[in-house]
Every structure is written in C-alpha cells, then in structure tokens.
Length: 96
Length: 78
Image (cartoon, rainbow over all chains, first blue to last red; front, top):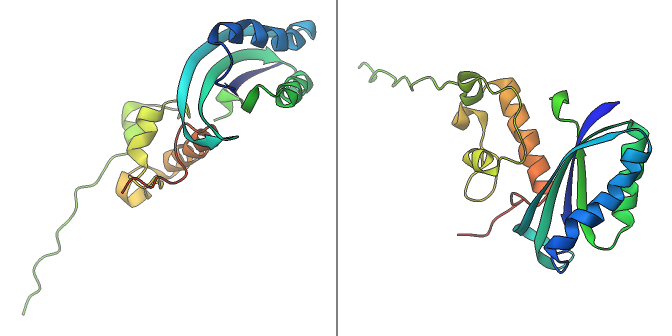
C-alpha cells in the first residue's frame, strides 16, 4: 500500500455539484481493492494558464488516497477514458 | 593603478533551508511564482540563491505545476 495524491482537471461545462459524486464513482475502484480515500478536495473552477482542449477554465480536484500501485494505475486509466476529464496527475508526495 | 575593490554580493541563503521546508508542493503556486520570471521561465540558482537540492525540487515542482496548467510554460505578457 502506498500513499498517492491525485489531481484531476475536469471539464468546466460540468456542474460543480456533480463533481463530487462522479469522482466518488471513480474512486469506487480504490475502495473495492482494499485501498482508502483520505480526502477529496474540490477546488472549484479555476482559470488555466493555457488552453487545454480549447478550454480556458477547468474544475480542479485533489484526492489523497492509499492504495496498491496497480489500483492507482487502473484508476488513472479509467479517468483518462472519460471525456469530462481534461487531465490527471498522480504523485507520491513523500517521495520527495 | 589599483582596480576598485570588487564588490562582494551578499550571500543569499536558500529560502527552503532557512524555513526548514523539506517538500516543495507543486500546488503552492504563490510560492513557486517567486521562482519564475515574468516570462514564465525558471529563475537560475544564482538569482534565487537556493541550494542545489532545493533548486532541483523547485524546478520539478514548477514543471509539475506547468503540466497541470497551474503555471504557464510561456507568458506573452510583455
């Protein structure tokens, strides 16, 4: 088990209230494989420094979780398949 | 003829060593912005005064932040 930090940029056309439930749905993978989700922090709408997929805004969310490496890989894969997600980043904070 | 004595610049201390920050967070854009120029370029160590390890950490953090569009790769504000 390892600690991870996941940052997601979601499509700005989504409703901010639907972000939390839809993220929870993705995080079901982590819970199903014996991992835990410590914190889901939705930053809300934020201006991007440069356009991503012709969009100048994005909804940011940061998730702290503990899981197996394979689980996180699968979670990242599923997130990237979704059209409503512009970008993801997985980081192991204590590595640095 | 004696040359004028070379001006000794004041030795800068690494901000992170001074504040005992061990982990440079890529989400802390307010802090990272101190280490980029107005063009969005990463400032050199001789400008920032950071130690080797922390300059490296800052550079990595800035690059991570750029990937997530928190900081610009280039900014044309000029």
